[in-house]
Length: 183
Image (cartoon, rainbow, N blue to C red; front, top):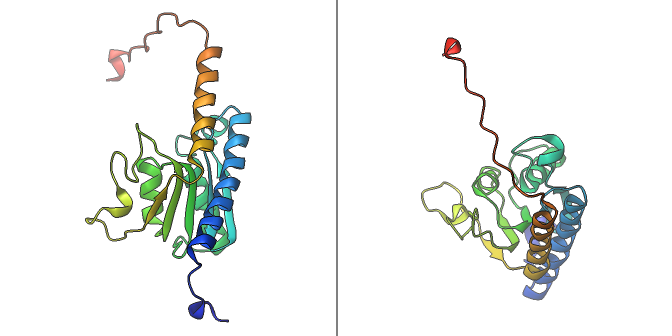
Protein backbone atom coordinates (compact mmCIF):
# COMPACT_ATOMS: atom_id res chain seq x y z
CA UNK A 1 0.00 0.00 0.00
CA UNK A 2 1.43 3.43 -0.88
CA UNK A 3 2.44 5.58 2.09
CA UNK A 4 -0.13 8.26 1.29
CA UNK A 5 -2.97 5.71 1.64
CA UNK A 6 -1.85 4.37 5.04
CA UNK A 7 -3.95 5.49 7.95
CA UNK A 8 -2.56 6.93 11.15
CA UNK A 9 -1.87 4.33 13.85
CA UNK A 10 -4.58 3.84 16.44
CA UNK A 11 -4.09 5.44 19.85
CA UNK A 12 -2.96 2.17 21.49
CA UNK A 13 -0.54 1.51 18.60
CA UNK A 14 0.84 5.05 18.79
CA UNK A 15 1.27 4.81 22.58
CA UNK A 16 3.06 1.46 22.20
CA UNK A 17 5.37 2.96 19.56
CA UNK A 18 6.12 5.98 21.78
CA UNK A 19 6.86 3.63 24.67
CA UNK A 20 9.22 1.47 22.57
CA UNK A 21 11.09 4.46 21.15
CA UNK A 22 11.43 6.06 24.58
CA UNK A 23 12.79 2.79 25.98
CA UNK A 24 15.48 2.94 23.26
CA UNK A 25 16.24 6.55 24.23
CA UNK A 26 16.54 5.43 27.88
CA UNK A 27 19.13 2.82 26.84
CA UNK A 28 21.15 5.65 25.26
CA UNK A 29 20.69 7.75 28.42
CA UNK A 30 22.09 4.93 30.56
CA UNK A 31 25.04 4.65 28.18
CA UNK A 32 25.67 8.38 28.68
CA UNK A 33 25.52 7.94 32.47
CA UNK A 34 27.98 5.04 32.30
CA UNK A 35 30.41 7.34 30.46
CA UNK A 36 30.07 10.10 33.06
CA UNK A 37 27.76 12.23 30.93
CA UNK A 38 24.39 13.65 31.94
CA UNK A 39 21.97 10.76 31.27
CA UNK A 40 19.92 12.02 28.36
CA UNK A 41 19.20 9.97 25.26
CA UNK A 42 17.33 10.71 22.05
CA UNK A 43 15.90 8.84 19.07
CA UNK A 44 14.67 10.13 15.72
CA UNK A 45 12.20 7.81 14.04
CA UNK A 46 10.21 7.83 10.85
CA UNK A 47 7.20 5.79 11.88
CA UNK A 48 8.61 2.55 13.25
CA UNK A 49 11.97 3.02 11.53
CA UNK A 50 14.71 4.25 13.84
CA UNK A 51 16.89 6.69 11.91
CA UNK A 52 19.27 7.72 14.70
CA UNK A 53 19.95 7.13 18.37
CA UNK A 54 22.24 9.39 20.38
CA UNK A 55 23.33 10.23 23.90
CA UNK A 56 24.88 13.31 25.44
CA UNK A 57 28.58 13.57 24.54
CA UNK A 58 29.55 17.02 25.87
CA UNK A 59 32.28 15.80 28.24
CA UNK A 60 33.77 13.34 25.76
CA UNK A 61 33.90 15.86 22.92
CA UNK A 62 34.16 19.09 24.93
CA UNK A 63 31.48 20.36 22.56
CA UNK A 64 28.76 22.40 24.25
CA UNK A 65 26.31 21.50 21.48
CA UNK A 66 26.75 17.73 21.84
CA UNK A 67 23.30 17.24 23.35
CA UNK A 68 21.55 13.95 22.58
CA UNK A 69 18.80 15.65 20.55
CA UNK A 70 21.25 17.58 18.36
CA UNK A 71 23.32 14.46 17.66
CA UNK A 72 20.19 12.42 16.88
CA UNK A 73 18.86 15.10 14.51
CA UNK A 74 22.24 15.24 12.73
CA UNK A 75 22.30 11.44 12.44
CA UNK A 76 18.77 11.28 11.04
CA UNK A 77 19.52 14.03 8.53
CA UNK A 78 22.57 12.08 7.36
CA UNK A 79 20.53 8.88 6.95
CA UNK A 80 17.81 10.66 4.96
CA UNK A 81 20.21 12.88 3.05
CA UNK A 82 18.15 15.92 3.96
CA UNK A 83 18.01 18.45 6.77
CA UNK A 84 14.20 18.36 6.52
CA UNK A 85 12.94 15.73 8.93
CA UNK A 86 9.29 16.14 8.02
CA UNK A 87 7.35 13.06 9.08
CA UNK A 88 9.88 12.25 11.80
CA UNK A 89 9.39 12.15 15.54
CA UNK A 90 12.11 13.23 17.96
CA UNK A 91 12.06 11.28 21.23
CA UNK A 92 14.07 12.60 24.19
CA UNK A 93 14.35 11.46 27.77
CA UNK A 94 14.40 15.11 28.90
CA UNK A 95 12.36 18.07 27.69
CA UNK A 96 14.57 19.86 25.15
CA UNK A 97 16.48 23.00 26.06
CA UNK A 98 16.22 26.16 23.91
CA UNK A 99 18.97 24.97 21.56
CA UNK A 100 17.48 21.51 21.03
CA UNK A 101 13.89 22.71 20.72
CA UNK A 102 15.13 25.26 18.18
CA UNK A 103 17.01 22.56 16.27
CA UNK A 104 13.86 20.38 16.18
CA UNK A 105 11.99 23.40 14.80
CA UNK A 106 14.71 24.07 12.22
CA UNK A 107 14.68 20.41 11.15
CA UNK A 108 10.90 20.62 10.72
CA UNK A 109 10.22 17.48 12.75
CA UNK A 110 6.57 16.52 12.77
CA UNK A 111 6.38 15.62 16.44
CA UNK A 112 8.31 15.74 19.73
CA UNK A 113 7.92 13.21 22.54
CA UNK A 114 9.79 13.59 25.81
CA UNK A 115 9.86 11.71 29.09
CA UNK A 116 10.38 14.24 31.87
CA UNK A 117 10.06 18.01 32.10
CA UNK A 118 13.06 20.26 32.62
CA UNK A 119 12.12 22.99 35.12
CA UNK A 120 15.37 24.89 34.58
CA UNK A 121 15.76 24.72 30.81
CA UNK A 122 12.68 23.18 29.19
CA UNK A 123 11.62 24.94 26.02
CA UNK A 124 8.86 22.58 24.90
CA UNK A 125 6.23 23.81 27.33
CA UNK A 126 7.87 24.48 30.70
CA UNK A 127 9.75 27.79 30.41
CA UNK A 128 8.73 28.52 26.84
CA UNK A 129 7.11 26.53 24.06
CA UNK A 130 9.07 26.73 20.82
CA UNK A 131 7.05 23.92 19.17
CA UNK A 132 3.80 25.89 19.58
CA UNK A 133 5.07 29.47 19.25
CA UNK A 134 2.72 31.11 16.72
CA UNK A 135 5.40 33.60 15.72
CA UNK A 136 7.46 30.82 14.14
CA UNK A 137 6.91 29.34 10.69
CA UNK A 138 6.58 25.73 11.84
CA UNK A 139 4.66 24.20 14.72
CA UNK A 140 4.56 20.59 15.86
CA UNK A 141 2.74 18.66 18.56
CA UNK A 142 4.46 17.67 21.79
CA UNK A 143 3.73 14.73 24.05
CA UNK A 144 5.37 14.75 27.47
CA UNK A 145 5.44 12.23 30.28
CA UNK A 146 6.23 9.05 28.32
CA UNK A 147 8.17 6.84 30.79
CA UNK A 148 8.57 9.92 32.96
CA UNK A 149 9.39 8.09 36.19
CA UNK A 150 12.23 6.06 34.65
CA UNK A 151 13.83 9.13 33.06
CA UNK A 152 13.39 11.33 36.15
CA UNK A 153 14.85 8.63 38.42
CA UNK A 154 17.86 8.25 36.13
CA UNK A 155 18.57 12.00 36.21
CA UNK A 156 17.92 12.38 39.94
CA UNK A 157 20.18 9.42 40.82
CA UNK A 158 22.94 10.70 38.54
CA UNK A 159 23.02 14.14 40.15
CA UNK A 160 22.66 12.73 43.67
CA UNK A 161 25.67 10.46 43.05
CA UNK A 162 27.63 13.38 41.56
CA UNK A 163 26.98 15.51 44.66
CA UNK A 164 28.01 12.67 46.98
CA UNK A 165 31.24 12.05 45.09
CA UNK A 166 32.16 15.73 44.93
CA UNK A 167 35.11 16.70 47.15
CA UNK A 168 34.55 19.58 49.56
CA UNK A 169 34.62 22.87 47.74
CA UNK A 170 37.59 25.10 48.26
CA UNK A 171 37.69 28.75 47.39
CA UNK A 172 37.18 29.23 43.64
CA UNK A 173 40.26 30.14 41.69
CA UNK A 174 40.06 33.60 40.16
CA UNK A 175 40.19 33.88 36.40
CA UNK A 176 43.49 35.20 35.14
CA UNK A 177 43.27 38.84 34.21
CA UNK A 178 43.83 39.89 30.66
CA UNK A 179 47.06 41.87 30.42
CA UNK A 180 46.33 45.51 29.69
CA UNK A 181 48.78 45.45 26.80
CA UNK A 182 46.42 43.18 24.83
CA UNK A 183 43.37 45.41 25.23
